[in-house]
Length: 301
Image (cartoon, rainbow, N blue to C red):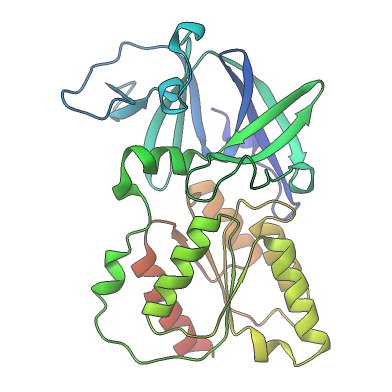
């Protein structure tokens, strides 16, 4: 996969790889895709999850293969299983079986419609957004949730908070931008358990930006945000665009920023550094997030 297709930092755009399963159109953020392969010889693993097809080794890395058709509950008889989309997120290399790859589309986060509660039940839905491309509705899938449902240990490691032991209460205001309702609750509860009691959660970068702008006009930014934690993938405004706006604003640019995302690979890390993120952590590592939050507050606040 040619990573040169990655976009300029902070444009609030992304590229979606469109693919087909059972005649329907789905998508994945190109930032998660390593390469696209024709179907390979896959070695089954005894006693593995029913959605784990097996493993293969295209070069020097063993890659787990997920039967995406089965994971989504589709009729396998209607699917061709011709291609593998090899991905990397949450520090995992995973391939997903699909029928056919259509192409890559450059879109703005503002063009992605977040499914409402009628089709996106919190805790169980795997659709993060919907895009209309030409005459097709392309459903952007939550691959992190799909993998977590198969392997729960790939989710937030809440036990890491318990390992931190007893901690003092801390009322320093922390602003968080995270679009997943499930992760929003888990991050909030984890930070509270770690002693941070003054937390404001926002559902995307736009909401976080609006909150900061309101603070500028009213009580002052430091009153409501001493540290920002942000995801990267979010509707309306992504985390990179949010960081860019903050670093260009004289009243906000001093705020320490932590990126907490499943997309912390080499390319995305360089993007975050160029934009001015102070720290970047892969999303499962909630214990490391608390440790880094402690360090930033001690150094900068």
